[in-house]
Length: 330
Ligand code: NAP
Ligand code: GFB
Image (cartoon, helix red, strand yellow):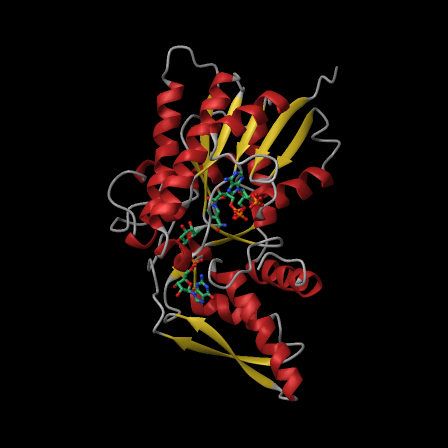
């Protein structure tokens, strides 16, 4: 009988899950008391309670890192708010119910900085989640995520509960194994696949420059966290974080950059092949202008945590995509 603590990672086959898997593989000794089980929708459709129950009865986790969700960028959310709401409500209710019933020691769920009130003061912090409606473009996803926070409060205060229900609040994430589908993806993977295609087309034509199409005006502001850094912080949350209240996992406010700047960093990552000039198409929506998050609570715990500089993270992600574009999720 193994005395290892079993950690079930739902959403284990996605961008964040795969990053946690590589952090776990790189730190086997430090994490030797845990056995991580990474699952995707092939192992269990977590929007279905019976399948969720069967999974939990099979794995019998001591801890749960709950990442599984219907996830997408601005344009995917904008056109599918009902689906994002219902599917994520179902997944979250099933996973938290089974964590409670199976007396999991700690269940760490994932919120997002995009679920905060659209009209608010800045920077946003963990206390502001419910102080007003979210941006209309992703209200379905946002309210489903906010219900995790409400479920956590309800379970934590219920009489027969023995699980610590808590949550992390990542900002926009990017990295290897992301979703590179242009219609559904977030901005950085969307730009990478567009840049990759533009370079390939230019080379085919013998041109030495090309355009990189950027949707919108490029003026909205974002904080981006490299998936490897987020993974390290989520493993830290598993081992150390014992508060019921959520914690924002983000680079600092001073790292906030415009979409145009992010696009330029993507173009620079291809400059060894072709010069890419940014071309902004304002027929596309800008979405939320800003969602500046404060990471002071994280810094109180980890004052010296070093985030990967975004230009390095983007270069590594572009390199990975070039080597894996045939198998990348598109
Ligand atoms: P992702 O790459 O789209 O991965 C989603 C994961 O959830 C995949 O493993 C997927 O399995 C699984 N999943 C989806 N529907 C499922 C279902 N019905 N049953 C079981 N598993 C299901 O997403 P991500 O970017 O890693 O996001 C992970 C978490 O971070 C999510 O909770 C998300 O809301 C949160 N987050 C993400 C960002 C971001 O910018 N990406 C920002 C803030 C918060 P398959 O591989 O089988 O599809
Ligand atoms: O990552 P993204 O799709 O979502 O970024 P949000 C959208 C911003 O990037 C808009 C611009 O200003 C877009 O006009 N943009 C430029 C692009 N080129 C592209 C492109 O090729 N693809 C995409 N997608 N955008 C999401 C929420 O908001 O944040 C989700 O809708 C999720 O729920 C995510 O939580 C973290 O950052 O605007």
